[in-house]
Each structure stands twice: as structure tokens, then as C-alpha cells.
Amino acid sequence: MRAGIAGAAVGLLAAAVLSACGGSGGGGGSAASTSTSGSSPSSSAESAAAASGAGQGTPTTVMVTAKEYSLTLSMNTFSPGRYTFQLSNTGGTTHGLEIDGPGVEDQKAQEIAPGGSSSITVTLQKGKYELYCPVPGHRQLGMETDITVG
Image (cartoon, rainbow, N blue to C red; front, side, top):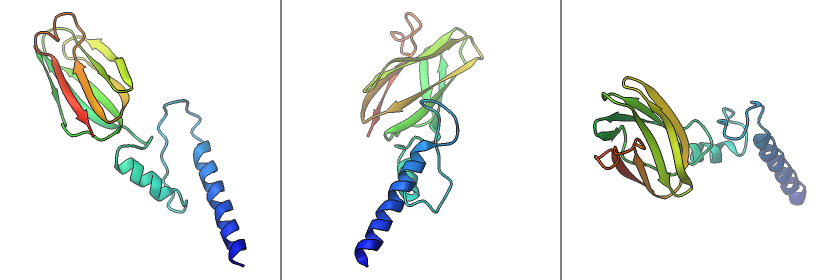
């Protein structure tokens, strides 16, 4: 009897995992995938992953203010996971944002004119990342900052 119950439980778990992987959003590659059902055996694991920033759910938004010649972030503590860096140019000249670090090389938000905004979504792993303005000369004038993901 116990073997039958254990076999049924394994079968249900496998079905839940496979159905969770399929998704019905029709989106591609990096589309957000969230689960709102509380009945799936895997939902608690997905919730824990999302809470730690490691899930494939909605990215955490980080506001980045660019002006002559600094970058200011709205947060300074990062856990591994997906982040959208929302760049806002409050300066008087064109600025941009580039991110380099583990698994993220030369990822850029579009350069923007004063008053404009652009964004970039990346998955951060544990490690150190450099964020800087890629407009020639701006990084050397102080438009850079480092973050540590841990």
C-alpha cells in the first residue's frame, strides 16, 4: 500500500513540475514566468526562489539617476536574480548605462538625451559588477559605480 501511495505521489510531483515548465504565456526566452496557484507542490519552491531574487519572475527594478558626472542607484544590496536597471538622465548631456560582471558583459541600456530614460534587464550572479556610463570620457569623470551581489 505504501509503495502505491509513494508511486502516485512521485507521479503527481512529476506532472506538476512538467506542467510548470510548459508555461502558457506564449512568450519567448526571457519572458517573466510566475505561478499564482497555491495548489502546486512546486509553488512553495518557486515562491522561495522569487523571494530570494533567484526566480524567473518579475525582475526587481533599480532606479539609476545619471547626471554630470555621477550614477546614483536606488538600492545598494543585491541578491542573485533578475534586475531591471531603469536609467533616468537628469543631467544636461547624453548619458547611458553599461554593466559588466559575472555572466553579464557589455550589456547596455540605450544612450539617452537629457530628460530621457531607458532600461536594461539582466540576471546577476554572485560577484562584483561595474556599472558605468559608456559615453566617451564620462566613466573617467566619475560616472561609474561597483555593486556586489551576494
